[in-house]
Image (cartoon, rainbow over all chains, first blue to last red; front, side):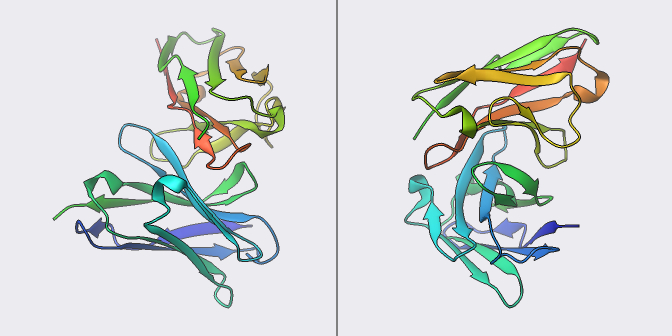
Length: 116
Length: 108
């Protein structure tokens, strides 16, 4: 069974960086698909933040382009999200996902609050 | 970015009733790249319909989708209690991929 699991701090201070890890089991992230980060804000708005492809190329939402970085560690079968200079507006539930223009496989999500 | 205008924002329906959600895109989308998700409280989103009209694995036949170009719809033919959730359309045609604002389905 393929599973994705997010991990990382649930509380980040404004102006700091948000860092999350997605651990994938049951499938090798270099075998295929785009490994994505998607977030859901309080009030239901959803935003596709970006992805790292199975080949290692990245694609970011232009609204985040100056702040976001998605990387991976293929030896651990993990991929990572770093979002810099966070504000309270980055408070959201963050999901990692396996995608190919659509998402059939999601992690459980991790809630991240940005607050001092 | 392609904006997806989803309506209505909420629906209150009786069990057995038919409900329809519409999703209008600000630019034309290939029907291969318009998808629908169901999200129940406390859970991750679940793919229900992909490529406009194809049911994902394990999805009951009461769920259906249709559309083309800039106008798409999602229908539950006979609402059941377990269908209470928020539904989202999503386009994967153009980067950045975008979601509709969601439609919250509640039971009377």
